Image (cartoon, rainbow, N blue to C red):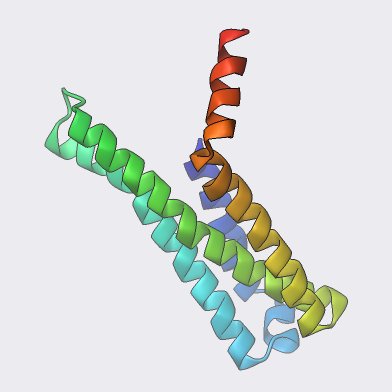
Length: 139
């Protein structure tokens, strides 16, 4: 489920480089920021694909607890470079649209807070976990 979305994002990031606006509206430092964002999304793809690659080559006929643990960790780790890549490009797009680095930075910081809440804080929150367990029983 995650991989197609990351692949689409990666494709859009690559296409942006071939757009004239990339070369005219972004200075060389901002172009480098976009390249770093692409690199982070690529790293995220590596983490997302690693469990499938490992499973198909090392243990194709079994699913062990170790494999599940490794897969969970890799998928969790994939969220951080994905978040970074999205935030960097969000900043660049915001800077182009609102034409203010400080406003774009503030909006990016707000998006970072949303990512942090939904991807890190809530999944680790005991209140959220109890609510999820309760809502699962009502179905």
